[in-house]
Length: 559
Image 1 (tube, rainbow, N blue to C red):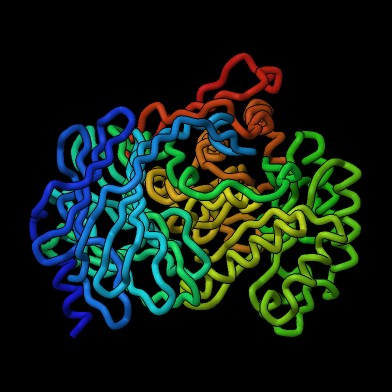
Image 2 (image 1 turned 90 degrees about the vertical axis):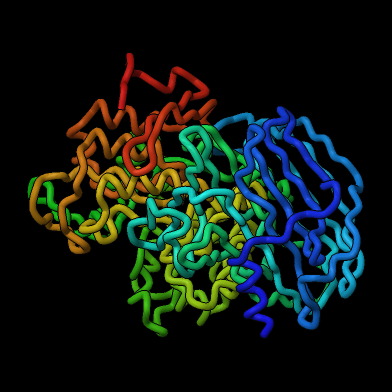
């Protein structure tokens, strides 16, 4: 019966607010987020941009396992907040980020939950709200997005082409964020979440055919003490590129605790795709000799790292593969030492089988002792809640042991966590270009950058240079890439990632000296990063300004 009630709330028209709403306006006053209690006792909110309603009155709130959604009794405007400051990230799309918003801590009285605080923040590029002081016990969220029109949307779709464009009324069933919405030619939105806690279910959305309303799929959250929900975020822009350039998700996350000055982002070579490549009689493999060639090339070009992928400690899905003693462990220690001599860090792959079967902190402590630079974690299993908890645990342990971390194979979506954990520098929250190239087309890229990449840094493995037609000699997925050399290098610049993992052998990059020079000049944080133009699924035009022009020994280059 209770599930039926939730569905009716999500998919039916909402009751109108009955009193004067509590309003929070952006610093430039273009965005207004309003809250009220409707005639049925629901907390409802509305969002307008440039005086146009884009999300009409929609339910939000939490209920206890024994409660209902019709139990809000009072809404008090509470304390106003005004912030005008800057954030200087260790790495990212720009070196200085304005942190400007107006906020309000709204006091809400519930019949069954008592006093709870509804925090609201409105920036010039979006709005967000969350609940704090939610009581211990089992809670269920009830938040919906009742769009004011039958807009066009795109959605993340795992390791496949993204869903969209589709009309909101055409969506039927579950959809995954980021949800990018075109409300008008000059009005774009993105629905996501920020500051997801370790006990929170990653947000999923649901709608029914014929409806323009979406609800957060309700999942029970169990807490032993009062807790704070994740931020529900609506990013706003007059262009799709404005969504790409936003830092709203990161700004909604807490500042880091501790020293992260050791975090070193940059371009990374990768041994997985070189396996089987042939150049003038030399056969590349995932072995020490090939690794030394890659390290030498990285040192020549100023690239930061070499990523060693699966099977270095034995078959990655075998329960007997020991992540610190198996197979090539001695060669791995040798290449880490060699890389340190050359100023190049080495990442180590770790499969979830070994991550669970062997003590994870002992494994990571051993990698730190060897001098590894980071960990690429693959094939994490579990429910979305279990994966979120595991991801946050491993991220914190990696930070403790001075390791960067990259999550692959259907990871938990990014939610701005790179501000709190600067070592969490990328995730495969996309269709990686070299996994199943038969479905990675140019349109995949120019949709993903306006959907997946809004959530945070993504590891897409762009920059493949062996582009002849027909199959390659590579051992894994040896199909040709539907691209060009110039486009491949452009993609490495456009794709936001703390680890720009490029997949080819040195000799193919050396075939294109000007493009290689451009690739070597990609240093973070950029002084400024701007999306100049773009249309979802068609094209994107982006500019990065480097901090030090001496990094560029080229007159000019347009990609």
